[in-house]
Amino acid sequence: MDAIKSNYDIHVIDCHYLQPGVAASFLMVEKDEALFIENNTANAHRILMDALESKNVKPENVKYIIVSHVHLDHAGGTSALIHACPNATVLAHPRAVPHIVNPEKLIAGAKAVYGEEGVKSLYGEIDPVDESRVRAMKDQEKIVFGSRELCFIHTPGHAKHHMSIYDSKSNSVFAGDAMGLGYPALQTGIRPFVYPTCSPVQFDPVESKKSINRLIQTGADKVYLTHFGLFSDFKACSDMMIDYCDKLNLIILSAIDEKIEGNQIDQYCTEKFREFFDGEVLLRGIEFSDEMIKMFNLDNQLNGAGLGCAVRRIMKSV
Ligand SMILES: [Zn+2]
Image (tube, rainbow, N blue to C red; front, side):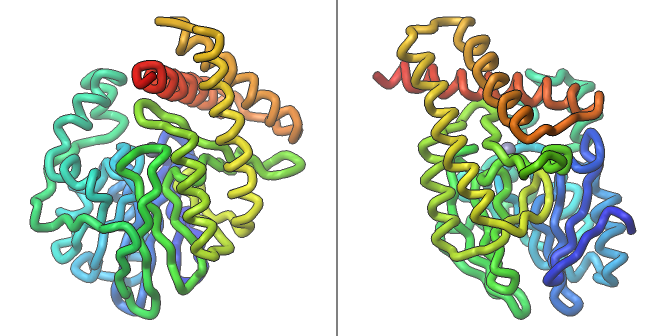
């Protein structure tokens, strides 16, 4: 199966979300048992089940379905997967659990952005998951899975319902969105490019930085990003992220300082984010395909709107 890359019994699955190399799910296998970290959307369900079959694991032997947070490109396929894996338990951040049990708000939020048909085609069906099948993971809580121990670390910043997972066997962290975006298309320049994803409405660069420091403390030397895959140089990634969290925080503070108001806030933040992004792309000599340009245009707009949310939040609180 071309979509799978493996290391330490961790299989990186390309979920073909929008296009290849955008969103991953991770399949961890220990003897005849398995777990998934991230499940993308219900549209990726067949890809995940095929990956499981290719590793000779029965759906009944999937023990856990772990989600870093409930954004729908990470957890949109939870109900489809739990249905297919009758003995699996969903592990999630305590703030994420209510949205998995009752996804109404998530779906309504997505519909407000993409419309009813858009949500269906992008994410497929999202059903409630029975409460008895979902377990809230405390900060620093650990589980043993085969020959490895997994430690769950609350990592707010990208979202308040975000957790990351440290794996003892590979000495790596599954960082969801807490260590940023690092699509393969961003790694084609003279050095890697990973940057914070500031999606609305909870992005907070100060909290992000604290979370990255918590992940550094695990001693991990590798990181798995949902967008996308294994980064074998944890330090390069965390250094970049800390630097960029500071830069993005400066955009937020300058919008406040310059007394930008109303609709102008999102416009200001999007322009500043674009300047940041284009500058870093230019520095590295990265060239994008037309498809990627389209995707980054949308992504950058979303990042600008996320910075705008942070500006409004701070303005309200002062
Ligand atoms: Zn997210």
